[in-house]
Length: 63
Image 1: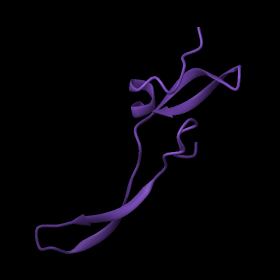
Image 2 (image 1 turned 90 degrees about the horizontal axis):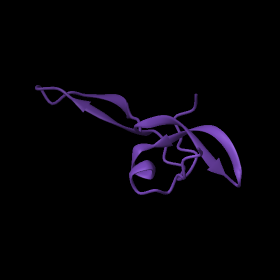
Image 3 (image 1 turned 45 degrees about the vertical axis):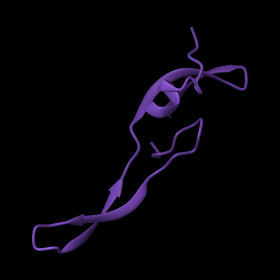
Image 4 (image 1 turned 180 degrees about the vertical axis):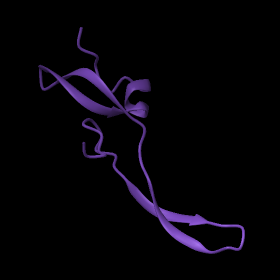
């Protein structure tokens, strides 16, 4: 599974984890993806969609 939303294209971002001693180590910030049956171009498919697209109704649930 690629960490990318099928609707908006939101993907992983890189950043740093900073410890108490202020030492930085690399990490990934990943979007909250959920598997969902959606209508994509008029076709019912199971895709990974971020929760912000689900909440804003950008992803239409297929019934």
